[in-house]
Length: 397
Image (cartoon, rainbow, N blue to C red; front, side, top):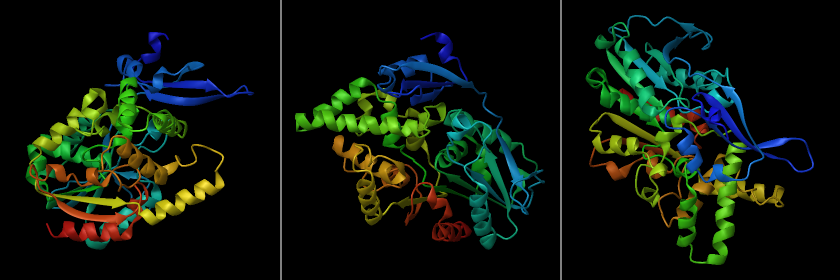
């Protein structure tokens, strides 16, 4: 494979031909950028399959991050940010969005128009005169550190920011890590911050992302952990097939995911490319005390009901239990079973509860706990109870 494939900014797809057709299925895709390069890709187990073709399907340059104010009448058009002196300000940071890469031209924010309406409505109920701002940034195209530094630079140069009446920062998913990293790096933010709220943020990472970075040696090691060698091969293959299915449905390996690897422990330390040293360092060195960590889980009853329906409708397909957030929840639990880690039976379908609420680090920094609420990783943004409870807590600071 030519070195041009690994040129920074390339979107690369590894494909296999669909039998009896002229079509190809994308088994794996990656965006080449900081930390995602030739050496990393060639070390991955998923990239070592016998592919029929490897194609550069696009070349993208990360867009420039900005903080915007939305027109309150339509929540679509951007307006100039006024002088913030004396105002109550909400800064919202969205989560990771692979659509920046797989769907170029997509609005660069997790908050769709409906989600914007829900978020703005709830904030206005508790903080009628608040100025609500959104940080739009290339969440998948650039690593956490770069996006956090850009956030700091933009915020510190906003007119009147040093004299705000109150400043609340809300980070959803990866956005919560951007918030924490930025606050740790900026003395101004630490001085003016009233409180920070994270919603379903993977403070310790997520095992699903770590598995994406697995080398072949990891799977051999995982087999050795299973008591029944006859079960091991089929079980491992099913998990690996589930990983492929996530890419087929639109996932992409990109720089923004590097910080979402598990931070330490649970066998992953044996394979350095599967852990996030950035995240571990952040958790070990953070000393902030003005945080609320909000979490949610998918109830067991809903999981059983959904899996039953999937099994009845798609009984013929061995991967019928490996599609969607409900099933990612199941996959997280299975990874935990594989590694003999009883830490991940509760999750929102993307992040274990033990990562949303990183009690392992409770002695490092203090945080208030909110939840767990009922909801999956994406749907939680529309949860009225979650917003009402968290905004009441923010109002108490």
